Image (cartoon, rainbow over all chains, first blue to last red; front, side, top):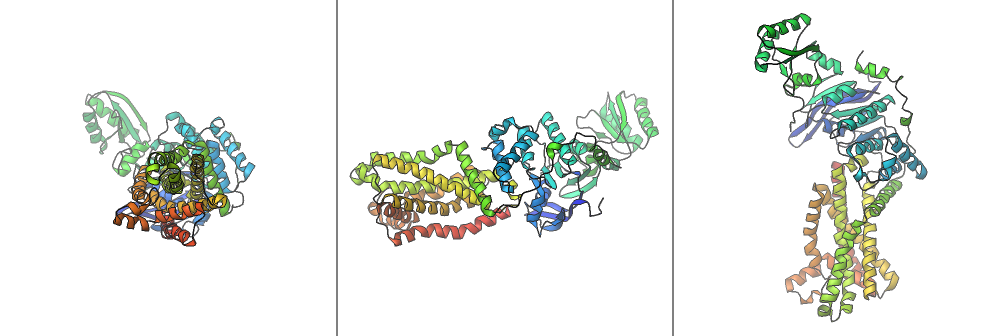
Length: 318
Length: 278
């Protein structure tokens, strides 16, 4: 993976401090060209800061990075030529229409007159915004805004597209739309680095995932590799009766505490093989605990996050 | 090999996203072209939000009517004579008040993340500021034009004619340009547009009202008269009266340009440093 030649992003020892707070505390990143790479972490983990450094919006306090072979420190303008950034907050002019926003950016890139208008029209129709193109952005829904925001990053096809929490605040339908958009972009050869706090999003989209917490990378790999770190398999049990007692029984059999699902209905324990799983179920039955449902499977990323950080994945930490 | 390999394998079977065909960038545009695009944005904003014009001109129009017809007779013998004295002053007041909007606009853009997009583009880094300036000049020209128009209807006569008026407006643009830096600095330092407004007016009020805009300072207490006489707003107003009235001296214009020049020299580097640090 890290052979240097096919890396879209190669970052070493990235550090950013804000006063006493070290937002990013030395992160290395190798993003292969053409991949969707997710940075996963809770609020305040340093995801956005890392992204903003790579997008030339923040000067790193230490570390170096090359984006498509261009040095972040020595040639920030060269970097800007090959990247596009879609920030966490819609970076659009709300008073202008969707079309005007795109024409404005196309002209800034150097398209003139009819070419700039043509670029805007092409993007609007590709992103299903042709009809809304003449309306002011302030009248757009969250999903439309997000689509326009991403379209605005594609005036010129970037080598690397940065997406900061692309689906935060969107409803499930709009989220699915943005997901398929991102997949389509990756298929057309754009390297995508996105941040997310949704484990499902990283799982769905990304070829590789870096898990970040408190400004450090605590794990990296494919979703499958990350899941493998918590054990070869997981036994998920939904006891009908006393959950606390069921958790104790499971812990006695497998030797580690059971993980409770966010809703509290499921208990999960790592098990090496089917024999071990059978033993655990038998122990529950022997204790007179009725089991509503059980299944073997890989751990969810939620559980991976729990195992890696020692805390629930979705908790907001300042 | 991993999940990604599976995704990548899907490339060939997925419907070819022809709509996402690669687009290469055209030749890099000049700094001037970048700046003009931001100027065009300012014009578009005027077209879409014409209400902002209302904010800009309503207060000065009301001031003009109030001072001319209610106070004018008492202050200068007749409303007509007072208008002749007051109109250049209200133009100065309008331009200075309206400069606050460039700070507000900057702060709003920063808050929305719009500048993040601009700053991640390979463009002349100061082009967005050039756009703000174009917007400011446009705003001053429109607001100033409307107020001068109303003044003419009410009987104001600039003795120096068209050349005097043109020269006067040029002075107003320079003043707006200089004062604009103050509010851009504030716009970059505080986090909400509302705060820019509050800070702005707190700073502006004493300067604008303790000046010779609405009355001759001779009737004021000595300490205030002393302040009014050194207040840059007074110098600007005096020069504008001179330009419109055809009695201007080079010294008056020099004094009027002192404050805008000083503000630009002092604050332009601060604004650029703050912007680059953000």
